Amino acid sequence: MKKSVRINRKYLLIPICAEKETKTVSFSVSEGKAFEFQIPVSGDEEGFYAFHYYAPLNVEKYAGKKMLVEGDVPEGFLDALCLSDSIPQICQSHPLIHFTADTGWINDPNGLLYQDGTYHLYYQHNPFDTRWENMCWGHAVSTDLLHWERKGTILYPNEDGTVYSGSGIVNEKGLLGLDCEAQIYFYTCAGNKSEWSRGKTFTQRIAYSTDGGETLQRMEGAAVRQLAEENRDPKVYWHEESGAYYMVLYLRENDFAVLRSKDLKNWKRSQTLTLDKAWECPDLRRLPVEGGGEKWVFYSADGYYFTGEFDGFEFKPDGTRRKLWKTEIPYAAQTVWGTQDVILIPWLRMQNKNKLYTGAMGLPRKLSLVRREEGYRIRLTPTESFLQARSAVHSSVGEGKVFCMSQRDGALEICIHMDRPGDFSVSLYGTPISYAADCGRLAVGEQVCSIGKNLNDFSLLADGEILEASAQNGLVLAVLELPADRKRGNVTVEVSQRAAVDIYRID
Image (cartoon, rainbow, N blue to C red):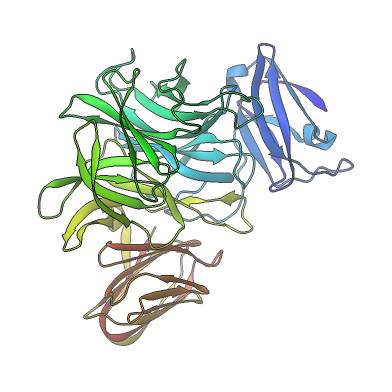
C-alpha cells in the first residue's frame, strides 16, 4: 500500500500500535528515500484503525514537496497519517525528576554536554515503539539537571545505518572549519542494522550544531572506519598534557581502543586494551580524590570501573575491578562535558508496564574517589541543584516509628541516619521496603538485592516507578522499581535503634 502526502507542516504524524508486529515503512521524495523505519501496525484492515499514539516525524526540510509513504501496511494506517505543526500531548504519568521520553523507547544517554547555562541530553530513542528498534537520537535540555524539556528527535537513521551511541563536546579549539561555540558530536553509524543500510559497516561519524543544539548537521564521511565488526560508542575528551583529543571506543567482547587526534577528523589508534568483564559504552575521566589529588578511571556500560594512569596514549589499570551499581537496572552511564564537577547520568532499564514509554534516565550524580584500604572507590552524590530543590516534610530523632503523609505528586526522599548499623522498615505508599543489617539485604516489595552488610546511612529517593537507594553517603547505590502510579499517600519509617529520619519533597 502507498499514499502520497504534500508536506505543508513541520511534522508528519505516524499512528503507532505499540508492541504489534512491525512492518517496513519507507518515506520518499523526488530525490530519493528520506526515511525508513520498522513500525508496529495493527493487522485489522477493516473499519476504524485503532492505535495507541502518534509519533511525530520531523519533515520540515521537505516543505512543499510530495512524500510517498509505502509499505506492507493496512489502508487504515495510511488513512490515519496526518500533518501538524505541534506534537500531540498524551495524558500519562511520568517521573518528576528522572527524564523519560513522552512516548517510545529510550536507552543510552548520548552527547551529554553543558554550554551557556544549559545541559543537553541526547539519547538512544525509538519514537515508533515501546521496544528497541529504529535507533535515533532524541534530545532534551535542562537548566538544573532535574526538570527536562523534550526537544524531539534530532538524528534519524539514513542509508549508512542507524544512529547508535556517542558523545559531545564544544569546539573550543575552533576545528573542523567551525567556530568555537559550535557543538560537535561523535556518534556510531551502525551499518547493516537496517534493510536500508544492508552491507554497510559500523563507523564513527561527526555531527555538529551551530544553533545551540537545536539542529544537528551530519559531516560527510567517517572519522573512524571499521576497526571491529561492531566498533561503537565513541567518548571524546581533550588531554591537556599530551596536547591532543582522545577517544575511547568499544571493539568486541572485553576489548576497547584508545585513539588520538589533533584535529578531530583524523584519528590514530594508540592502544588496544582488554578489561575483565567490561563491555561497551566506555568512558575515561580523571576524577578528584577526596582529601586531594586526582586519579584516572575507566568505566563501561555495566558499571565496572578500573582506576589507573593515563598519559593521553595508553591507560594502565591498577588491576582492580569494581562496580558502581548493586542492581542491574542502571546501565550505559556517561559523564557530562563542560561541567566543573564530574557528573554521571545512567540509563535505567525500567519496564514501565502499561505505559507508552519505556526506560528512564537516572538521577545525575557527582563522582569522586575515596581512598580505602582495599583501594579507590567511587562515591556518587546528588548535585547541588537536587539538594536546593528539596523541601522538608518531616524531621525527627529517636527510636521506633515515624509517620508522614505526602499529599502532592512529586519525588520524595527519605534519609535515615542511624547511630550504628541497624535494621529499618518503610511503608512507602503501601509498598514495603526493609533493610536487614546482618545479611545486607534490601527488599522492595518482592524485589530483593544484596546492598551490603552493617550499613547505617541511607537515602531512599522515590520518583514515580523509580527507587534509588544509596548508602554510606553515596558509596553504595542500587536502583529498583516501584509499583506504577503510586506517587502520594502515607509514609511510615520504623528503625531498630536511635536514628535521625528526614523526609523531603522534591518539586
